[in-house]
Length: 219
Image (cartoon, rainbow, N blue to C red; front, side, top):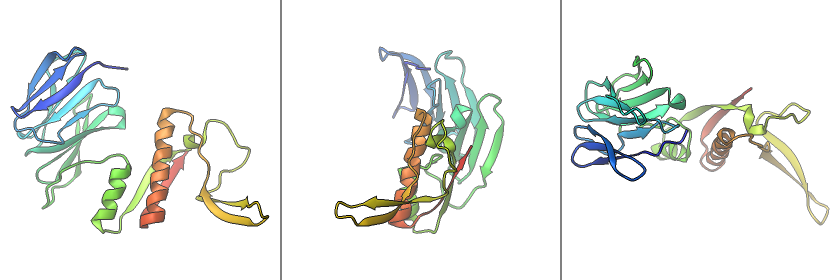
């Protein structure tokens, strides 16, 4: 659904929810809010804001009732919605990452505290994540759970080959060039289109930067 709401944060430690006329319809105290602690759900119905007091507040932008509040032991550094908005992940100043069930408020600690502060969370294999693995100079193996929907909803009458597809390309002079390419994609929805973008990012960083990637397409 489309929700005509805009969430903004200020240096006065406030989050303002604005309507389509940019009038404030809800204000939340955020306690030392800094960059990277504001997130919106994929359907635009919920806003999450993390604060310096360790709170993660979830606000339904349509009902505008008292927000649900989850707690960390120390200041929150980043929040992000995952699993289609059913969960919100957050990290704090001592390196802990927590996953919260938006409906029940149940918390599952994903990552124990470390000696280093976490500054951001990435939950999708985008260009930023892949670039970060290159900059880290570590040998990182990325495993991605994809979907066969990137190849369309129909059938091609054969088993789609694993990995790369060997092809022959005839030149005008009669010479045949042999290459290996990704099997052609044919996404059947916007969702599957985003998966094909990931598909290309993986191939690019594998070819150019030697990133190890396993892209599992289920279905």
